[in-house]
Length: 252
Image (cartoon, rainbow, N blue to C red):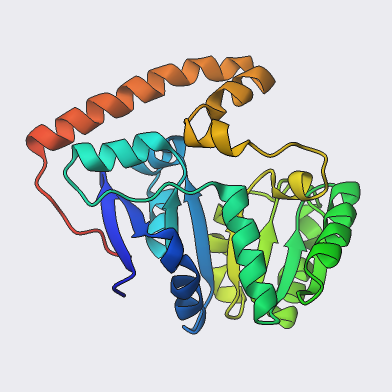
């Protein structure tokens, strides 16, 4: 579709979608058969795809791969590709919920601890009264109940399954079980239920626009300082790709 162009950065798929076109793109994809997934791709996710064939397939299979790291946008520009738009995950989810409500669609909440899940549901009902919540299930569940969860999601067939923390394999979960669902969209964002329940603060617009969200992550987990080595490797890969690789189309 004209509003969405798929490029690749180091061979990893990334979609170029302007914010003003995102709603139309999503609902155009929604009309297509099968399970769809929107992936928020960080630089660390991009590097993960470089070393994991399964995760690479997850991204190629995704309906939309939206970059959340400035480094991906800069990398695409460095490789002389169309510059993608960087998306703030939580703000994008809020925008999608608003669009779903305007169309009287439904959602299913999956993940988080019971308190976060219940508070998130309560806040969503208060903020989006036209949005139907057709089910919910907490995260950190035993493997033995997973078939029941998959069955419940399939029967509810919501427009969107919003997935938070506590789900085995994170965003890979929807990909691994994609043939067992209906036509739902899946979005995984680890912090979404904690933010919706007001248990965690969202990243400020100013911090995100400056690309400084890594500092809050470092405060929570100082060991992430070692990601500097992965970042340096990313820079080396970009240089090598520009010098020695020919352009290849990325297939979805």
